[in-house]
Length: 307
Image (cartoon, rainbow, N blue to C red; front, top):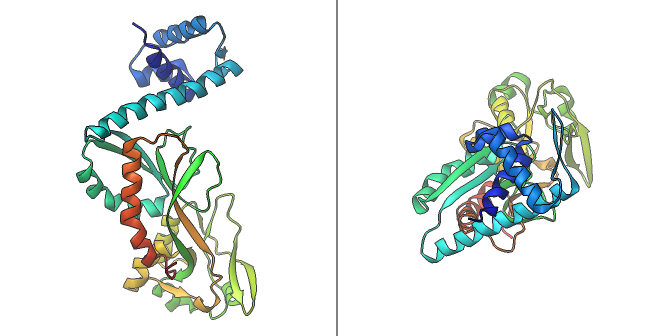
């Protein structure tokens, strides 16, 4: 029986894991069975797919081409099955979602109960991280990220926009006082991010000019949710998306500072997914549900006027 699609699945996993043994463990096969399968593909194609050494597997040019084709074919098979399932009223399968930590914790995770009740046959596999995600390499169906779309192989649906806000806890302000102008921040503990794209400067509008002021405070973190927690504990002043701290401001747990000097810059909040001709119904169902549920909330929590 011809099982070339099964062979492709094993080959793709070898590429993604980088070893026969890791693939064997993942697929409940023996390493020798995986090695023989890859050799069988090479014999059938008449080319070498890997350059093998005792420590490393490296794709040949033919191997890279076959990998790209295999991924595309396997996606097409999955899409075909999902389209048929949709016609029969069934939307099923595993849905891999990757969301930035603060947005996932405050917005996406709370809506999953309703989504699961509407689509009980979709198994959601959700990861929360602020690290950069590559959808195909990381096997992610849909992700939520801040900022503009910067990859032509991706498509995006906009969930909303959020302005930025400088905030602090009342406990911090009681101890250190509130800054009245951006220049006053030089005497305060300003929390920052430690990832490479972080600049260590905050923008402000002073009169008719936009200025960027260097801030510091001796405490850095790699994600917005940790920064929010540090701010709530009164450890310093932070600058975060309003969507992230909206509820804290409403409760009085945080206070917005220097609103008259706000630079007016915003974060775009987008659902991103691969630019494919046919989208699996489970992916489309999640995207449509997220836009319907979250876009109205972000119109309020983002702190921007309609339009």
